[in-house]
Amino acid sequence: MRIFLVTAAIVALPMLSACGSDTEADPAPVTAADISRSLQDKGLPSKGLADCAAELYVAEGISQAGLRTLISDEYDNKAVDQETLGMSKEDADRARAAAAKIGTECVGKS
Image (cartoon, rainbow, N blue to C red):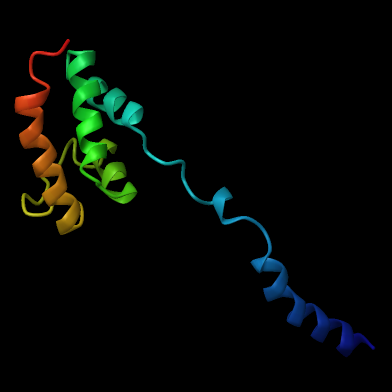
C-alpha cells in the first residue's frame, strides 16, 4: 500500500506542477510609459521628448526582452557592445532606427 501511494505521488507531481498560470512568473510588459520614465530618470530633461522617444522605441517593434534591456541599469556603468547594444541583432537594428527617428520627429517637443 505504501509503495502504491509513493508511486501515485511521483506520477501526479509532474501533472500538478503543470497546473497553474505562467503569467504569474512572467514579468509585466514594458510600456512606453516605462521607457519614458526610464529616459527621464537617466537624465533626459524633457518629458515631451522622453514620451515621443518612448513611443518610437515601441513602434519600431523591439521585443519585450529588448525593451527590458533598454530600460535596465545594466549598462549604466559598463560598456555595451556597439554591434548589439546588449540586445538581439534585430532589436539593436530596431533601436538604431528609432534613435534616428527621434532626432527628426521628437526634437523640439517639450
